Structure formats: C-alpha cells, structure tokens
Length: 163
Image (tube, rainbow, N blue to C red; front, side):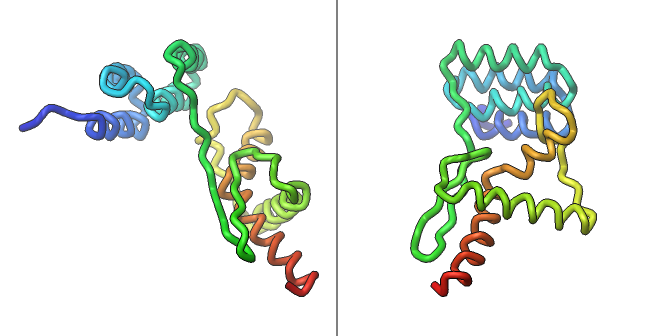
C-alpha cells in the first residue's frame, strides 16, 4: 500500500473477516484496531459476532470480558420515526414507548402474517446461545421492526380517532 492503513482500512478488513468467517485473521485485525481506536465498540462486537457464528462461545466471552476491562460499552442501535408531528424513538427490545403493548400486538400480528406468506426470519445473525424460537423473537424485536409496527399502530389508531 502506498500509505499506512488507517482505522477505515482495518475496519473494512475486519468486516471481510466476518463475511468469510476468518476468526484467526479477525483477531489479528482487532488487535491493530485496538491500537488505533481502543474505545470503538463496533470492532469488538464484530469480532465477537465472528466467533459466535462459529459457535466459539468461550472466545465470545473473552471478547466481552476485554470490552469490560477496557470500559467499552456496546451502543445499541436506534430507529426513529415521525408520525403526526411526533418523533418516536426505538431501541432493540425497547419497552419504554407509552404504546408498547399495542405496538407489540401489531408486531405479533405482522409476524404471523409474514410467516403465513412464507417469510422466515434470518436467525444466522442472532449470536446468542438460545433456541431458534427465541432467536426469531429477537429478530422481530429489532428497533427497525418496532418502528415499522408502530407506524401501522399509529395509522390504525389515527383512523379510529379520526385524526
């Protein structure tokens, strides 16, 4: 390379390691990334996910322990929508929205309809040591899906109240 690799270059290589399931190179790349930007949660989480995809749960625990030791916190993803002039914010498995019970009911209804049409959630990206049904539930409670189901709930509720 005509220049020294930077965080973006090493990060792209780590992403390629995930795509190709190369946990050994991923570990070497993560070490470089820790030297350059030790407080970045994404690099640690990505390597942890590489190990989890291979079923290497001891290595996952080691990475999570290293994050704790380095005081690196995983920042949860967030999805926001605007409906009727109000901003609604969702995190994965969030329970804080005032209409969460109704939104979750809408989410369950959507999930059932999707399954009847042949949709199967991709659980390959759920890197927890839980059964398949729980993985599907986790996928359906991702922040984006909560936001989408809230739109349907808000629209349904607005049509009922005439707003």
